[in-house]
Image (cartoon, rainbow, N blue to C red; front, side, top):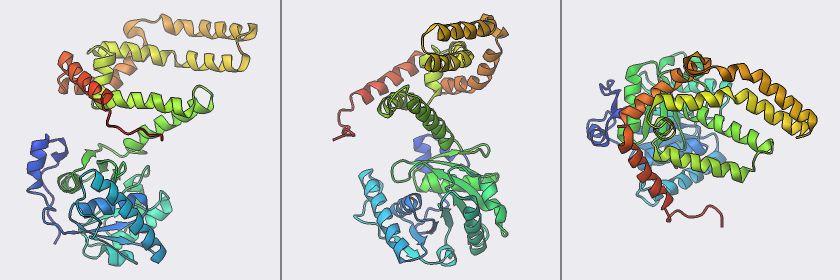
Length: 372
């Protein structure tokens, strides 16, 4: 029968020692349980390899022998990476097999991971078939990159609520996964499976959102980079260098909060709010000024238009302190970062720890170069 919902919804927030202890009481603590993989491309095959590396029996659904060969090749490639990371121990994945129907794939599975292409109608059709094939109580995770689980589950007739968002980065390369369900017991079971059994870094989301967290942030970075490159501000290589340095500081600081408040704001919310207020207040002036210069150059007409922009912008720049509308907006959005900064300890001690991590990254001379 299906396991009862667990009472440990906060496993993902536990310290490492507590998380290790939680593994001993996992709902899925007696592999080999059977995992069904529907959608056997790069992501699906990576999921298959990860589950197999952690001791689960994995069954993937393919439509023909050609897809079976592609699935086996992709799973083997993911296995090589998992071995290099110390997750997989055997020389080859022996717990992965394939079948040719959703019904056969889902038979006896304790969990189903769907990773078909990001097409709403296709996902709805496939997930509806999975829903019909699985006993009640079996969770159906969708790796959807942007679409919400509630939208994907609209065609399900048995139990739409068990369709949950389980979106990873790249399972063979990284252990991040974000999950969402409106049912707290489903979230608890996902944390139990993905954290306690797979060793993933699970981020439970508070609500559905287009692109979830990871892809929404990635899309913002990718869009901005593409615009900068195509508008002639920088080359792709130069944009990559900027992103790499930003990524280094983000990694050293454990994300954005410590960097925003600690390194940029000097440990005070007012500091980062002041900088953000200046930055966002000058967005219209900066973007329009750049466009004017690009079109009209530095001649008389261009300079006249720049003076006009500056004149129109002057009233907003004269506002000070709490009279500035952008300040209130930035305070609202950045105050959670101050809370996280304080949770991390804050002050000089935190900045010192970040510095030590930066030094470690700077001196990581064992990193191989990306180019030949």
